[in-house]
Amino acid sequence: MGYNIWAIWWLASIGNTLGSVVNYILGRFLVQYQDRRWFPFKPKSLERGHRWFERFGKWSLLMAWAPFIGDPLTFIAGMLRLTFWQFLTLVFVSKSGRYAILLGITQLF
Image 1 (tube, helix red, strand yellow):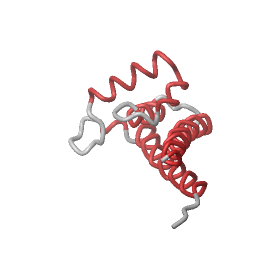
Image 2 (image 1 turned 90 degrees about the vertical axis):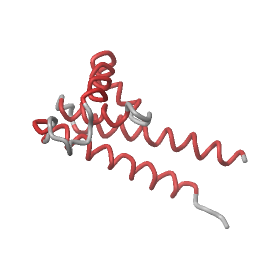
Image 3 (image 1 turned 60 degrees about the vertical axis):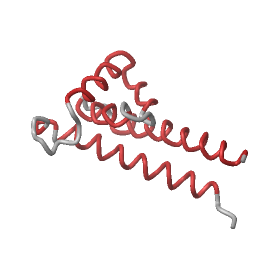
């Protein structure tokens, strides 16, 4: 059965980027609730993400694909009120790049 590799790449990239947009919105508008139990990020992961953001600035969002660091980075971008279009561009490049590499690897086998 043949799959449209471009459709898979596009849907995975868009879906994962939209998930990061949720984190951005949480960071931008709900940060005052970070002491609540239901809040999605623990202080330790926020601190790790904040260190990355301090060190590399908005370019740290190119690591948004990475497990454990990517979600806090996207949240912190919202906290720091990074311009939404810069955020969206960098996160989409990060997420779509990861899926391009993964799909490329799967095509070898």
